[in-house]
Length: 312
Image (cartoon, rainbow, N blue to C red; front, side, top):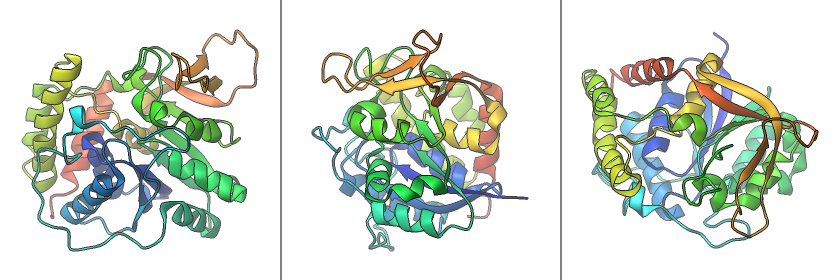
């Protein structure tokens, strides 16, 4: 089976944790490394969470810390959803391993330039690390197969009426990536809000009865409760793993190729992903936008991913 080479850039994060699990355990994916950015929590905490998850799931790849703040705006975090640790719900022992000494931006550049085939980059947090890598070494774009982004929305946001959290955290970074001439697939709130970890889903995953499913259940208990408190939702939308599900099986999503630009106006729509779904402007199309999701197929992929950790 031919494996797809993957760099995962994330800010763990409850849903990032499930994305990591799905990516590291699947035979179709060759996970080359995990780079970490601030977002759901501070960089110190998201980096620590990445180490915890790698130890718990026995993921043996480099973990590199990246930017502690966005390119332009001040850093904001999301403790209302992800808690004080960024991964509330699970108590891990102190990590035995350390982060890789390389900066995430340097690691991204080095890995891409030295890969014998093109690499897919998946971002499930603010896109600061990848954008800085593109600016520091523009040649890396020739070595990227595609960028799959969890972020944005062609409808409404979740931190403002216009903007989704990951894009809003660093719109300037998103703008760099979306205008890079690299194929970009945007997996936004339009589809990720359709895959909520409702009680029947949590019960289904709990029945797997291994360490990965135990982690899933503990994380979703807190994630779901916080989503209910903040947004009034009956279950937490499992945003980030949709990117990995799509990488494993592209048929899980329906996508449309459109022109998309990032609002950098610093006004009320700052951070909006302006998706010209009806080609009003007749501009060059640059982004594949996820418009539909096979919910049953997605949860089958999550169940399969959890089941692959039976030997932990």
